[in-house]
Length: 259
Image 1 (cartoon, rainbow, N blue to C red):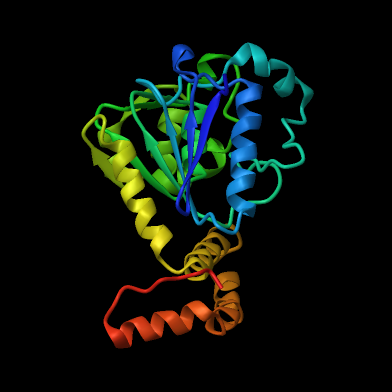
Image 2 (cartoon, rainbow, N blue to C red):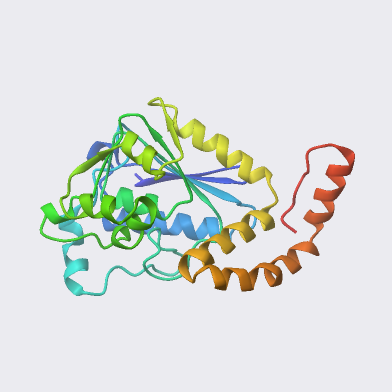
């Protein structure tokens, strides 16, 4: 049985963790399947947005540590293979298409770190988060030490990174770590609702906006400013811009092709 479910719905790629009997604990095989799905999202021109979710009562209990010990001990980490893209964005290139995250139940360690590499987060009330690594003798190496303080502030991040304590969905919502807090069972549908809106928007515009935002975070505001007009120039020559203007004139919904 596949450790993840991958299904295309229109321009959306649904990527679901599918090891509920093990609380979706991530082993290396699951990592590679997720990485292959991310590569598909990135490289299929028909796909415009991804939704990362999980089957069962919990998003994930975290890494299956006995399967990862050798990776950590090597000092090199895990390398995405050909046809894969790292879902943690520690190795290799970043996605240029957005991912919506939907979680419920327990979302520990690698679940938090995958969430931090997504763009919009939808979470069920009662969801529990934690970076437990310091309680297991290690520290987070999937992006939490790099990204969590940017999301929730230095003190808040260190409060939980250094203790391994849990934090709640309510706290995550107050911090802005998640954007939608919904009733249990509604998280996937809400994520799909948002994904549909993104999929119906102009793909070149969506990807341009995401690119500029990521440059501002990784390289700084000045670098992002320098790229704004050079990057919008080819977009302005696209068929989608003509369609966007025409739909405005005709007072109808635009139908974009990503060209």
